Length: 168
Image 1 (cartoon, rainbow, N blue to C red):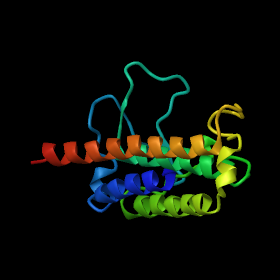
Image 2 (cartoon, rainbow, N blue to C red; image 1 turned 90 degrees about the horizontal axis):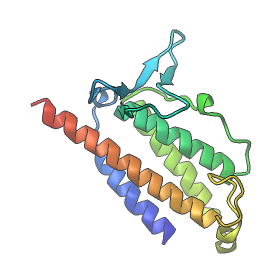
Image 3 (cartoon, rainbow, N blue to C red; image 1 turned 135 degrees about the vertical axis):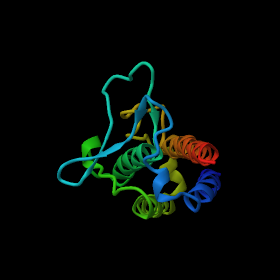
Image 4 (cartoon, helix red, strand yellow; image 1 turned 45 degrees about the horizontal axis):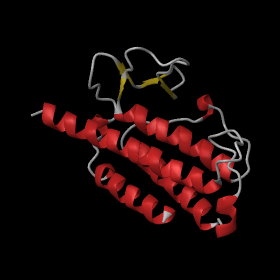
């Protein structure tokens, strides 16, 4: 069921990924907005605050795609038993095709994790995102990935539609 749910979510994401244009990634939908900014060394850095601002900034598609890459990379690290990378270690490759290929690569990495899980492993305590709380299992983590991805896919889709509707 969890794999089916992931595949369904990903098929909805592909609908939007196939339609994204390079200009969609950094389009700012509101005056209070979080986006990706290029540093002097050429790397992309996300807008960020340790405490949630009020009002909450509206993210760009670029920011949401970085956010997906961040939480998914860290989840894959946990699932593979690796030391999880910090937020600043997850580097966004830039908008357009580079971001889309990065996200598709994360999907491939996640499928390798899913395909490598035995049914009995789904009942093990998950180390992430609940910090080893024994009531949450690897199956919960997989369900969380599905829910988080669905939320982010919806955000990207809505931003894409708003940009298209506002440009014409």
